[in-house]
Picture 1: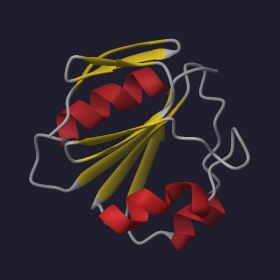
Picture 2: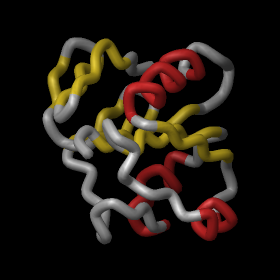
Picture 3: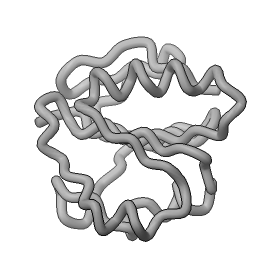
Picture 4: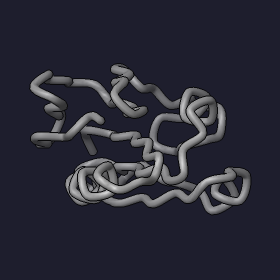
Amino acid sequence: MSLIEDYSFGKIVIDGEHYNNDVILLGEKVIDGWWRETGHRVIKDDLKKVLDYDPDILILGTGNSGRMKVPSELLKKLEFRVESYPTMKACDRYNKLIKSDKKIAGGFHLTC
């Protein structure tokens, strides 16, 4: 499982690799360059790869200041639990959950 080693505004380090774009984590797979159709608002189409992965829990990092929005109507359309936090807290939460027996996915907005 991928472990987040460091996060700071605009940068995340996962298993020793540095990323400067938003990322999705699916088990050991890191998808670099996660882009949302509406920028700071997550819609279901933005999560196609997560839906294919079919996690138990999705952790979303909403940016340094928490500007990315996760609409409540989206949460009703998903068949797994979603937790969203400002990205620093989301990284900590992801690292704790990844050690559990649950199937965890993560999506991390690195700026704003």
